[in-house]
Image (cartoon, rainbow, N blue to C red):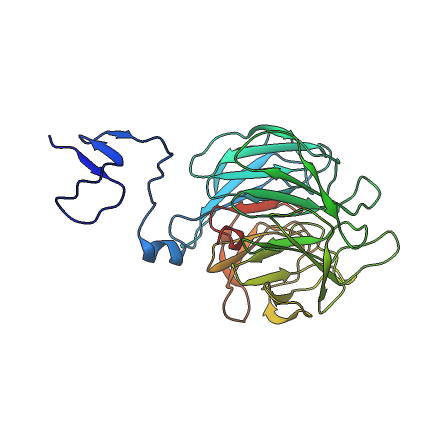
Length: 336
C-alpha cells in the first residue's frame, strides 16, 4: 500500500514530506496529531459537545458525575464519580478534560476526568487556597477559581494548567472578598460576577485576562445584587449569561453581558422557574442551567440559545435532584 506524506494536502503528486500516513493505522510525526470530531456544521451546532454535572447536595453530599449531549434533549446518564463527596465545588474544562476544584467538605481537592470517556475522576492536585462556593472559568489552557469561602470570604484568584496535573498557583485578587459568585469566559477574558461579602450581597462584575496574571478590574454591574451559591454562569465566546440566585429571595432572572466590552448587564429573559444553587455551562450555542433548589432540590436541566433572548426550555433531568453541583463542557465559550 502506498504511503501519503503531507505537511498540507495540496493535491496528488506533492513531494512535500511531513506527517506520514503509513497504511491505514500508523501515524509518524514529531508533533501531536489530533483527529477532528465531526464536521464544521456539527461543531457549531453543538454535536459532540458533552455537558458534565458533578457533586452537589441531596440529603447529604454526593460524588455523582452525570453527562448529556448538548445538541439533543434527553435525561442525564451516569458518567462516574468524583474522588470525594462534596457540594459547592466549581468546574472548568478544556476540549478534552473536565476539572473539579474545591467544595465542602473536600475544599482543597482538584479532580479531573476525560470528557469524551466515562469513568471515575482522578486526583489532579490541590488548590492553593482551599475554598467552596467559589467561581470558576477557563480557556483551553488554563483553569481559574476566584473567591469563595475558606470559611471566611476570600478575594484570591488561583489557576492551573489543565493539560498537566499539580497544585494551583496564585493569579491575583478580585476587587473584593466574596463567596457564592459566578464565572464565565471567552478564550481571552474571564468574568467573575455577584456574590456576597461578609456584610452585603453585591452586583459587582470583575474581569481578568486569562493568559496573564494580576488583579481583576471593574467591568460593570449585574441588574441585581445576586448570590448564586454555585457556578451559575455560562458563555459563548462573545456573550456571558448569569441565571437564578438570591436577592435575597430566589429569582429566575437571566442577565447577559458582551464579554469583550465593559458595562452593566442587561436582561436576557427568565429561567422556567426560580432557582438558586445552580450549575451552569454551555456549548458555544446553548447555555445550560442544571440542578439547584427552588427551595426544594431540583433535577431540572434547562437550556437557552445564548445568541438570542428569551426563557429557558426544558432539556431533561439529572440522575438525581441536588443543589450546588458544578458543570463543565468540552464546547464552552472559553474554548474559542
